Length: 96
Image (cartoon, rainbow, N blue to C red; front, top):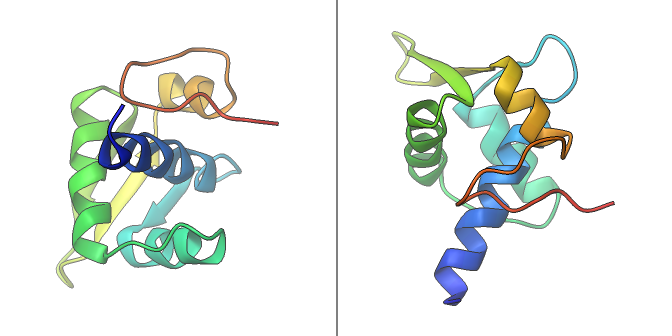
């Protein structure tokens, strides 16, 4: 597996896990800051790209706000993936 693929899989599960606690919603700026805080620095543009991919997989619902931020909300399936109950190709299984 290429490093870029490995990083992408980690980024995706990190985004899901950052939304794991109620209300299961966050905006792209907060998610970017959350990734930085857990040692996975990324850009806001990359977060938006990965949120779009997660939405295509049915793991989140997204809405673009007037400010340009993207608001993401976990779906039930996304919550199951974040908790490690379901695995999806392209998303790293969460660790302990």
